[in-house]
Image (cartoon, rainbow, N blue to C red; front, side):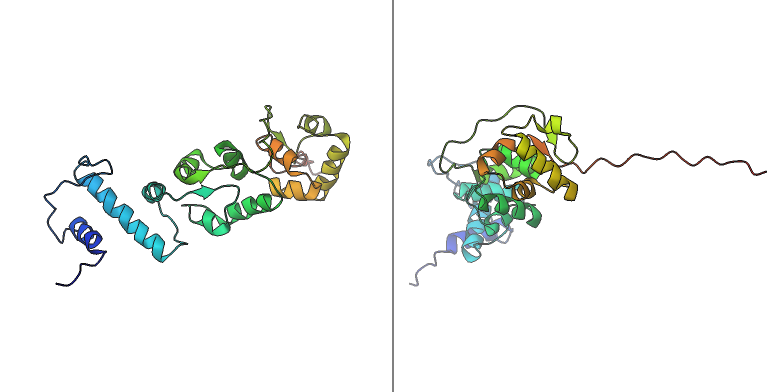
Length: 232
């Protein structure tokens, strides 16, 4: 008798899920040995095993939705936020190339993110987007302890005056003067741009996460409309 191929059980489940075979009469059992919930749990097993097969065939496979994120998490896949590569980030549903570029620029300069709130602030993520990714995210900290949060209102670095900028942690007159000088050359695009142009050490940037915003510069004064003089 020929040996059964190792994919036979998976193939059978796929045929059942697609309606090409009748459902098995045996209850699907979970890891604890107890019967799983009827059809929904069986479908989850099929989808998870199918995703596992796809990931083996294509390690760079991009996850498409919350269900695939949940299955990838169940398979043990995680993204180490402070060590992730571009390919890792691009697996996440909806993760854009400009967001990946910002994260990698910060990572290359030594900046680390201490938790989901940091990622939310740095990327200006929608809360729903963060919840979608969160089952896969790990925030491991490397080196000295993570900085404590610096409470206070966010400062719009492209608009604030010297007095408002002075409220930022580790801001001194020299650093403030350089910020104003650089800002005159052009607005800051994001946190990585701010760090590069001001040559900020990573520990300062980490303390500024959530404390700076990058609203565009305020528009110049609006001139009143010209007065129409009556003709003589």
